Every structure is written in structure tokens, then in C-alpha cells.
Amino acid sequence: MFQTLFLNKLESNKWTINRIDKKKILHERWWRQFAHVWQHFLFTVPLLRFLQKENPTIFYAGAYTMFSTHEIACISGLAAAHELGALYPFEKDALTVKQFDLSMNCVHGNCRNGKKTFLQRLTTFLLTILP
Image 1 (tube, rainbow, N blue to C red):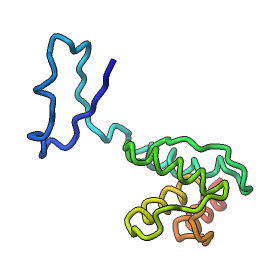
Image 2: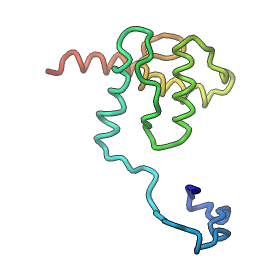
Image 3: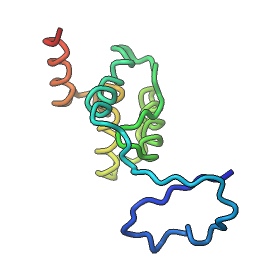
Image 4: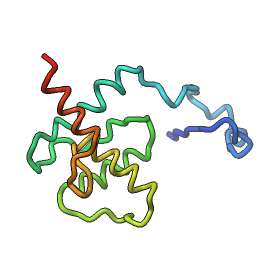
């Protein structure tokens, strides 16, 4: 059994789909990468961080993705390791640090430096005033 994803139709000339024997394909399904409804991004993803509670115990180390990408699965593993005391290994790469901090903020409720971000302060404020 083999599964593959062909993404970025603009670069479809690089795909290998034409090399797959059609007789060996059991099932073919085309879908859009962003398959979540807007409620997923508004309610589910931002609230996952509250599963962590206010202590350093890891209750959730999964990759319930924000953007339906495999990269988030890797970031979630690094984030769980960071929460358990490991150092983030890619400090010199500004883009990965930004993505890592975004994931840490959304899922774990903090960033590498332990400072509260604007998003954290806003979310906390909104949750205190909502019934």
C-alpha cells in the first residue's frame, strides 16, 4: 500500500504521477490541501493550548494541524521536546524560529523565551470576559 500527495499544481511538471501504472491504483482521490472549515481555525486550534493547563506537564503532544501540513507534525514533536527541557536546534534560522514560536504559542501557550505574546495576552483577556 502506498499513498502519495501531489501538491502545488503550478509545478505539476515535476510530479511522477504519469509513471504510476493505472492498473495498480486501488483508489484515487483528489482534494484541496486546506480542507478545514473556518470554525476549525477560529475555535479548535487556538484552544488546544489550554489542554496544557498552567503547569509544565505535557497533556497533548500531537499534531492537530493548523494548516493541514506535515511540517506541523514535525514542529509539534520539537515543541513537546522543548517543553520537556530540550533546546530548540534551529535557532539560527529566522523562518523556522518564527514557525516554531507560532506553534508553541498556539498549542502550548508560550514561546521559547517564556514571554507572553500579544496573541496570548489577547486570548487570555477574551476568555476572562466571555461568559
